[in-house]
Image 1 (spheres, rainbow, N blue to C red):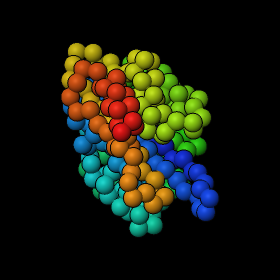
Image 2 (tube, one colour):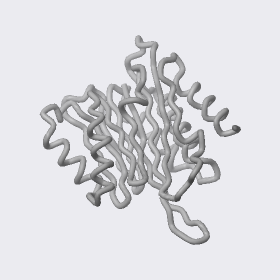
Image 3 (cartoon, rainbow, N blue to C red):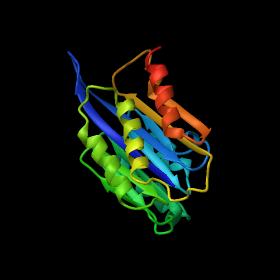
Length: 213
């Protein structure tokens, strides 16, 4: 199992318009934070199922060079001989994108909202993604995006999450970036838990401690 959410949020300061991009993911494998979630000031991408980190790194690089994020990822998938095993989704500055290859583990699928995408594979069913999306849509912006994304992972887990209950070692990660120039990014905007039986709880705990520094 992997399920994840990518988000774009626009906001205003006194003198300019900005955006923040975020991605959160959990899986019943170790170290998902090293291979799946990618974020920059140009967007957020999650690459999962049989992961191909190039889709995330290169997709954001091309988005930074002026391509729409979806066009960039489509081009990368067209050159990937194992595209059927990939699941990749994300948000750019002006578009959303989701792809689930036909060789992903059942149940798999994705949803695309106005400013977010969710996707997962090897899940108990579609209800997991619906719970993630519903949790994101239900929140106002009174708390940080990183905290709200962790809550989205918790909602997906509570809806059934991974169907492979025999795998104890799990991981989770959350990453957020802003287009606004921030010389000291918040510690809680880039966190990962690499090998634990309770990744979402541990990620929430790490977030709370980092937030209070």
